[in-house]
Length: 169
Image (cartoon, rainbow, N blue to C red; front, side):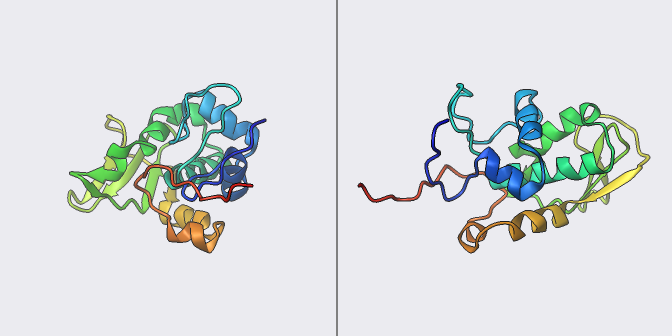
């Protein structure tokens, strides 16, 4: 297995699992099945290290919370994919703050303060809910698991990888 380069703003699958509570097997399954692809995907070539962003950590923590609540992930695949996308977190070029998510077990919704209503991450009209997830607590959980240096770089908007400078031996 290749040794990952030290990166300041990204995390290996082992770091992701330690921070979010997902197992390595589940993280690999989510990547393989297209639920949660690593933001810094280096071609998905066997033997290459996959790097996850801060946003990926938050989404992985949300997935873990949904699993703990007994919600079937296959019914939420499209919504989970949308949580990983820039379009969900950025609105008109500005970072959108998502503090709560609600689900009926089939779809995921978030509150839009400008519209004064819940907006679905995917198209549909279902408006009954069985489960509400606090995104802010998922972000807080992820931040608590990071080092002070990692916390200082935490950002939902994905940035290019920042490698640590290492001294030649």
